[in-house]
Each structure stands twice: as structure tokens, then as C-alpha cells.
Image 1 (cartoon, rainbow, N blue to C red):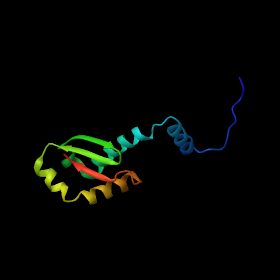
Image 2: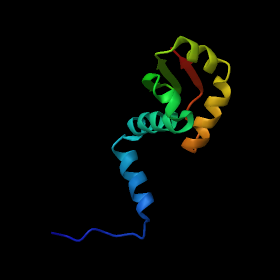
Image 3: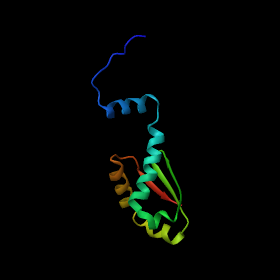
Image 4: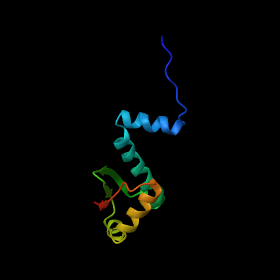
Length: 98
């Protein structure tokens, strides 16, 4: 067996390369968006969240309370900003509450 050529790459760089080469970023973004929702919105709202889906820069959130859905609809832009801030990138362009 031949030895591989080793470069001085940080672990973060190696992981980014692995994620990019195996096309895993889309799936990781979906998981990150769901985790960010629960972190930003807290446990009170998370209890009423039934389903979260990230598709084409749009976050679809299903809520079991129509009253809560109506209240949150007034602050969708702020929610989007908080989620993107938590994610550390502009991943979400639109939030749709169902």
C-alpha cells in the first residue's frame, strides 16, 4: 500500500470537503433548520410544532394551534432573521406556517 499525501488541513476543512464531495449539505441543512426552530422558538412553541420541512430555501412549519399560527404569522420576518442568525448563514428565505 502506498502512503497518502498528507496536507496540513484542519479537521473543519476536512469535514467540509467530505460533506461537499458526498453531497450531504442539503440534508444537514434540513436538520440544522429544524434544530434552529426549536432553539429559537423555545419549548412552549415547540410543543405545538408537528412538522418542519426545509425545501428550496423555504421553511414549512406545521402547527397544531391555529391561534398560535396566527400570532406567529405577524412576526415571520423576525423569525426568519433569528433562524438565519442561529444557523450562521442565509439559509431560509421564506417561512410558511401551516
